[in-house]
Length: 227
Image: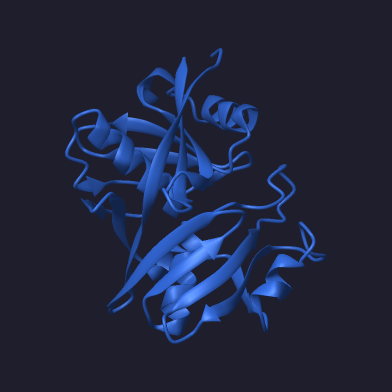
């Protein structure tokens, strides 16, 4: 089975650097068993793998190496981009959490989601971006940590790093859409977040607990796995 590998939330001057790797199994119905999906997600080792169950309707199933997610940001941005590359409208994605509208503009793929869907990540502010850069990977402690500092508070520019600390082999998340949603909701303002080595996440506070999340996506290639 071929797995599409993408980098989501790419940055850099030409939009080609950074990005969080994502696996997408386009033929989700070929892997109907939930346990087998979990095994494949663990074998692939990406922070998330998406199984597309109905491309026309946007029905998707998201797994980390250790569990299933009702919602996640970078997988939905990535799969929306990929579906459009294959001729699907992808106007609405349907993960277990609920309907997630999607659009593209100026090369950026956007999704719109409820901030309450992005749970379980502790936001911790540091004094300077240098403090963020100096953190060990991962910092001591347990539980998901999203460490952030202002790069330019007036412009809404943030430096961040994400540490799952859940014991499944993902030491640091290169770009974390759900945490970006949580931070945007907490600060109640639009943000441009530089995360990890070279990733860039854009957010828009739409009000009433709704956040738009956007970024650029780049294909890496196909990875073949045995089922």
